[in-house]
Image 1: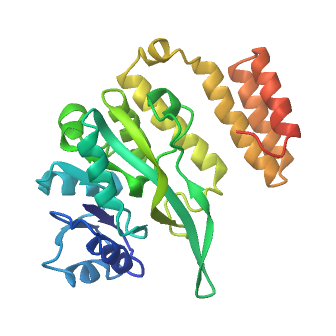
Image 2: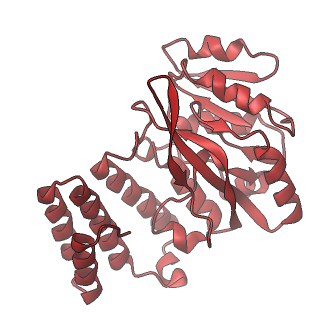
Image 3: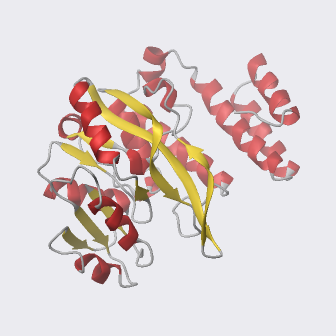
Length: 293
């Protein structure tokens, strides 16, 4: 079980407690302090020897996860961010699933979003699309909650480690899921097995940074495109239509915030990418409908 931690002093203890409370105990729990300056390392060390603690200079979540992977020995590798929580039977259910489905390389589940408000925990809905997860679907957006993921070691042996490029920080997991999905079957469990904490310190916050999210998603897809240039032909996805749709999705998000100036800019960007009739229909739908994706 892998916990990357950076300046998470106020949250990581609860995360570790949720990992240690699993109904199926973890063979090893590895926490990596990624150059924190707020006392996170001291909190992690207070849990030794129940967990293994590694410390390194700050290099981003991918480098922290890679350090833990290299140090690990187990067949299954599960990830959890330092401010999220696991349901008590998360690992038990997922290990049973993987044991019964040897063709699945990556397994994930739904997660409940929550926020701490005035001393109370408030639910903000669920994330995690589990209908028909595959590489093609991932091109349209990251629907895999990081803290619900468990992979086989064979995934690392086949596709390598996470990409540590600074340009991919916050979407390094998205790029990794796509890379794994090019070589392995992925599956999702349609039940919440983790809790995703919404807070200002999250790398992607609560999703309110629309332009940042768009830019990072495009970077992740372009990195996969660089590695697998035939992916558009093999998946049957029209590259320009996909990119146009992502810009329209960002425009729709700006519209929902009441910012029509930014909304129209994103629609114009979409039209610069593709003038196919479908793009015009999407823009009309995104402009008029209360829900569009």
